[in-house]
Image (cartoon, rainbow, N blue to C red; front, side, top):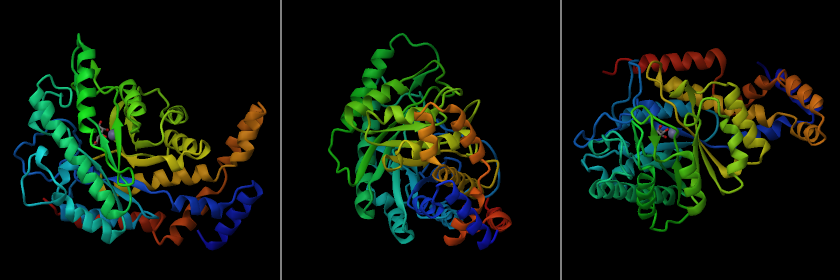
Length: 415
Ligand code: RNT
Ligand code: ZN
């Protein structure tokens, strides 16, 4: 597409009362927190002492998995190079970069210092997550709610240290680091004392979060889930559990799009939870039949999410994180396509004739609302996206495909 088609598109949007320049400017200022774990199939870089395979599984055997922090950083640099704008990296505690071999209750900032130096160099913000899975002490699918006090204490210490690391990351980078807590805790078969398990989880979280951290440096977030493999009957950290917890403790609530019943509309939840919470964290994902973590497509779910963020004025109160991992395709292509899809969805939402749509609805003129939403689908969003990419010096179309393929080929010789 050429400059001319952008100018035409801009004029078409102007006819609809939409300022394409303002939309691009807004989009440019929305950081997406890209998750490190798509790059290596959620394996991490721990010395394998306490580590175990349990918890989260990526499926597939596409060649080119990053095996070291240096390989992962190289892949990330490539990926960010194909994504317009400045973004963030979401690190998990098991991605430490050190010759030391600390167990999870022994991690410190120094084990992540190389990531921070690199983030400074690249102009990236960092987010963080304690890792409560892939460890022998999580093999029962019980961590912070484990009946054994010793195991709970081990994980509390891990979480406490993660918060300190996150705070230091935020301080070093001058941008608050979100520290997101997700635990796999639950029961395969029907429990008889859900209350006790939830009381233990709450008490552990309270201890873990007791130390005050500067909100300008780090923000706590808690992530709920409906069910997981091996915990079909009961997840201790359910949606209701964490919604209440987040409200009582003024943490962020993390809504993962794969963590609800497949017919639930996660976009619909934003305006409700926002009434009781200052900030929200999203894990944008694509569940297929269950929490399968497929690469996000530019589909209705993602468009609805983006539209809610824009129309409910939630962009400034929402941290957009991604959470998907597919090991059957190029991992770098997965990052790039998924992240760009989130941006495209946001651009599409920013380019909708919001004032007209909202006033039609307020006047109960649902016919106009329908006409507008459906006619707006044909607006030349692609020309604006093309222009946005050109201005940000990243390829589109065949050029992008060639870049993604070449990089995938380059890393395919990795063992
Ligand atoms: C698991 C949660 C969690 C993880 C990451 C790796 O179901 O979605 O967010 O995917 O922490
Ligand atoms: Zn998640």
